[in-house]
Amino acid sequence: MNENVRIAVVGATGVVGREVLSALLEQGVPSEQLSVLASERSQAVELDYGEDTVEVEKATPESFRGIGLALLATPPSVSRTLAPAAQAAGAWVVDASPAFRADGNVPLVLPTFNPEVLGATFKGRIISVPSAVTSALVSLLAPLHKAFGVVRAQVTAMMGTSSAGVGGVNELEKQTAGLLSGREPEAHVFPHRIGFNLVPQVGAFMANSPWTEEEAGWTLEAARLFGARGETPVIAGTAVQVPTFYGHGLSLHVQLKVAAPVEQARAALKTSPALKVLDAPGEKVYPMPMLLTADPTIHVGRLRTFPQAPEWLTLFAAVDNAGRGAALNLVEAGLGLLARPA
Ligand SMILES: NC(=O)c1ccc[n+]([C@@H]2O[C@H](COP(=O)([O-])OP(=O)(O)OC[C@H]3O[C@@H](n4cnc5c(N)ncnc54)[C@H](OP(=O)(O)O)[C@@H]3O)[C@@H](O)[C@H]2O)c1
Image (cartoon, rainbow, N blue to C red; front, side, top):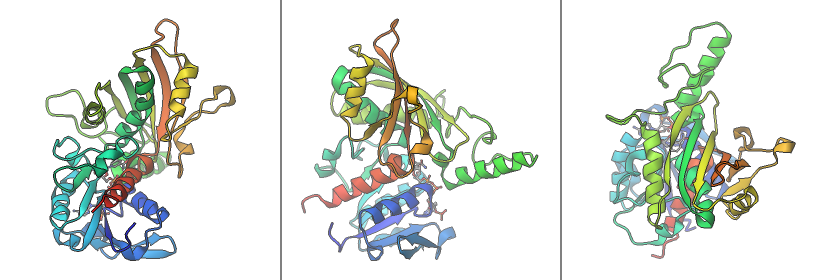
């Protein structure tokens, strides 16, 4: 990578932003090449960056002068202001928020699925990456769709509290400690108590709809990603907030066009470098969020079919929502944009 290109990491103090810094460090990007930005609240905070520390500056629309690449891990309202400002300053912009995921003028890129878009001609300099659950669903369904055809997929996504950022992590920690000490918990980030509970609502409900924005996003984003290649599987399901910190678990039922024995389905999943198959139930080997630390793959296992409906494949998967599901997509997409021929 050209070492004269300056990279802005916006939202660097958040759950995703910190993972972005780790991924850039892993790529060998020196701290001098970085501009580390967040809200006014974090101004002058020092963050570890390998052996160095980097100082957080307040992000403003003027922060992007001289920036070649801006990686945004900010709330959507902030991205809607800062992404166009970074673009106007001449930077390539990759946004992790839902702000542009449904915008037909902004390419939606999952670098392990459609990296070709990064080198293609498109309007503007902003691209968007899908949600962590969509990233996992598309990665899981792609090899099955190619081998057997996927008609529909029904998912229950069990989402750790870091899906709601640092605030979500802190709320679970506080409520759990409080409940163990007999204190009545207060819910601020989530609609109900999350400590020792499950909440079948992640994010807001869509206007006049029984679906949440999170759930509707999976259908829409998967349609954008698969749609560019032809037939789109129908994806629908329920997002459940669970009292864990990091990692999401996905219970997935996939209706195939052509019934596939489990061995063939497992072989198809193994062809994808984005996936790691952990499927030896007799030895208690299967995906679990606790196994995801620093693993850039999505784990999949518990593959099953049943004779009465052989075209339905049942499986369980786990994804590191902040790392593989967000930060790695941001960094891989950003570096892909910088590699475009001038
Ligand atoms: N968490 C996930 O699993 C996940 C997965 C995929 C996509 N995403 C998306 O990624 C984005 C970030 O999520 P997160 O979980 O990392 O949230 P987070 O932990 O709450 O972090 C938000 C970051 O945005 C910064 N920020 C807030 N207001 C700002 C402002 N006005 N100007 C500049 N920076 C501001 C915060 O800075 P301060 O610390 O100074 O407040 C913080 O660094 C969201 O849009 C989310 O939807 C999250």
